[in-house]
Image (cartoon, rainbow, N blue to C red; front, side, top):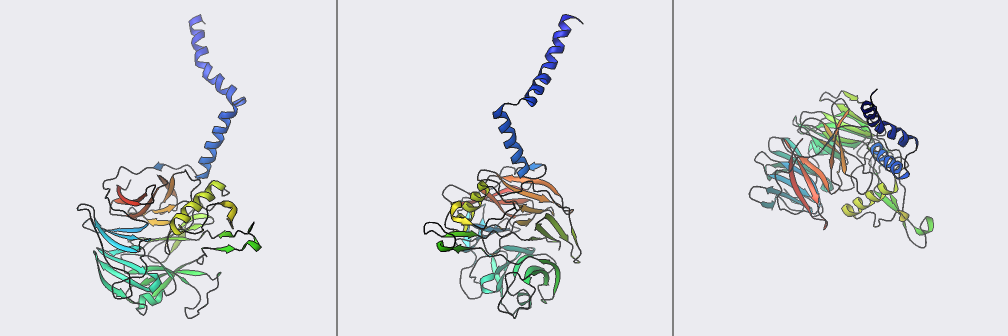
Length: 402
């Protein structure tokens, strides 16, 4: 071997020799970095393609306090529910105009609490006023009917929680399995997911689900508080989430274990494979992130100090019911037929992650947004994001759906 060739061999081998020495005796700082990266990767679960939203195509200057949901109309206008302001609005991004559709009250066409907005075909929209036990039916940006509690379809889900509507004439709701005539409901009563015909009120059972969960409680100082201060028991709501699709399919996302169950329009259901969530325990950083979000959205609990809280789950749930509103859901139906699952945050600074679960029950990809942004609805080929600034003001952005 010539001297020149020998030097080439040494140069080519040097990186591999260095790598072997590093693996055998890694530097403490580098080891810590690798451990941190590995922990972050494991906390997100299995490795899947990560998508980012394309740049927005529309960013109106409208300001909101807490956008619950949006509904895109065929002419491009948006129906918008602002939960903190308790307003139902219609906005036109091209003209910049934003105005109220209805107002709060008990009269025809009025509502007591704005709810989610569900498309029922063409430009028709359904909004459940849960506090008043009635529904509003809208065509485009006008309330055309108020369905009161004695209407067959409303009566069929009395005391339950509407989960969505399809374009085949049905609504989907969670109702208690005990007779509706009973005024007292036990906390451990099971619920059933039912498909109800909007005209006749005839309902069919789709599946059995977990009961609604208490939002939390206060433990007096004498029974857990320290130095005269109360301890707030955290009521993290971990139960099945439901997404209803226009074609009549229903996705039921189970938290423990994490998996998606798909039910077709005939009522036949099939559970997908169990998905690995990666992280096993809820860290203090994740708890603080949850406290900050729920405190900002609902005012509960009135503290962000872990020492003043109790009742945290021992495990790390894949998702929770978002701490925002009466009918909040961590599952959203996407235009391509997948269910979008909002995962529970792993830390205050981590991106907001959404799992994209196909109809085989497999997480095919993940969508990541900055922590200050959240999905609030879909259009035909678009997704709408509420972006919160440092002052707490929210603005809407329209992005192409990737």
